[in-house]
Image (tube, rainbow, N blue to C red; front, top):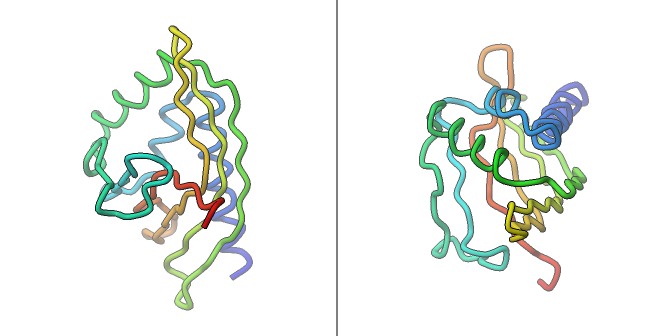
Length: 144
């Protein structure tokens, strides 16, 4: 299981690199074709009744266009990420990573888009490689 944990950590690091370098191709290669990514209305919206889908199910062209738009219109002020926990299924075919993030994007008018809190990245083993199949939006658990 240690080897799988290292592979998941490598994927978390690769995703961080994609954000840091604003490289949409690196980002998209991590996602499974059935990936979904629900987002809370705010980072305090712990009740999934308040969550939404920003992009729908993974679609390469749509997701590329949407993430590239963010990269083209925003400066990445900082992107601090710390993996808190990695859990691998007993069968070795699924895993999740809990990651604390503090990512600050600023658009050309100075408006901030701050992702601060905790996320859960869910992975499945597809053939010989791991892919992200689901990812929660950022939630703040600091006062719970």
